[in-house]
Length: 552
Image (cartoon, rainbow, N blue to C red):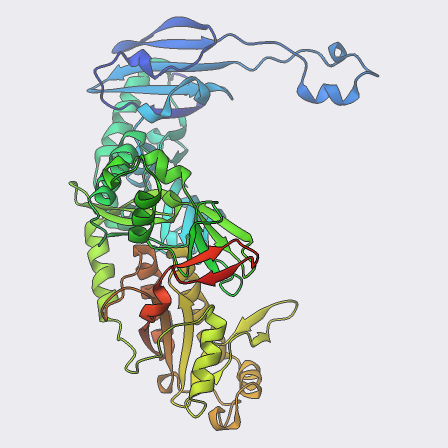
């Protein structure tokens, strides 16, 4: 009986179809030794980077007391194997520096991920890398001590972007373990001569659609990493802006900020530039063409301009407290030709399955709008708006903004809501912003509602901060959540009664509504209109009275 092949670790990329020679994927500037490798059904090329023997880097810590030569010499060897089999070409890297010898932009995205999810049962996962699109986009790796299913990893199959999966394949000849990102990493028993056959098997798994039964959520959201595709999307975005087709393209603050500190916004560092209460794409385009001679029309704009021009957030004294590029503030939704939608958020492009987008939009449209019209926004901050609303109608509204309630020990604080009504409306107010900003709003409302429903001591602390007319009569008794309505109120200068939110905000609102409705709460969304005169640009005058604001 022949000896069993030894285990080998392979890091495999599938090369994109191209008219170029297969060796065009190599990018190493160092000399490479080329060797021909023969298989049972073909041959390949092995390129080895000549090792540079030297003492380890940490040896310098002991100099000059001990000569570096006393530590001996080490040499890290790296190599790339290129071969064609079936109708595709592959490259396999070896050694710690192998991946730096190739241009990964010429390799297929998600080859490894799809090959793995088509090769492992749904309950044989061992680790998962994911990005959660909630209040803060968080990247994490979760590993288990035993094989498990996706739900046991705490995966939110609708809101998490899965970047990598590791698991045990359904057949031993595929390997003991597979890990998939763009590359496929396999720990497998295989002879060199049989390698092309194994690669054809992995290619067949990559092309399979069987994963849609066990892992359908894999296709919901994916970051676009292909440089050529990103460039095409950027060009399409640029054409949209040049044509002033701004219904699906807008500016929004891209990260969570303290709105009480932000007094105005300004485009660029020129202190004579107009300041604004909020950022607006159409206004920025108009201001830029009026003040920059070489930009006589939006058609003169390019991508470098979007990346280099800045939005500055200013405090009450005109000091800069934050800045972002126009490109990072852009939000846009573009229809693709491949049954996908493409979204840009915080400077990154994402591919989202069109049917998934349609489902999110349908559920968003079904969330009730708050039946009562909230007063217009004509204030410098959310805090001053909330105070004004409560002061104007104390019979209806109680102010709880900034009433952070200690909970859970240590420094943990929870803000129950911004405004609370005698009708038991729990109102959370937030100025319009990008996905991270609004998702933070929905996260706050979800946590507040859950704790209020579950914890009597928290309800008692809320009661202590309310006027007697608004208090719960029996805070120790678990409330009937159906008697309460959680209202997410967004300050928006969008015209009309409708409210458009970035896709990831719509997605997170749907998740928040489902969780709160699971407890029995009624959930609605409200649009707080911005008073027209408040949306007018103001100009900072730099004469003797620094920071004084006058109408243009």
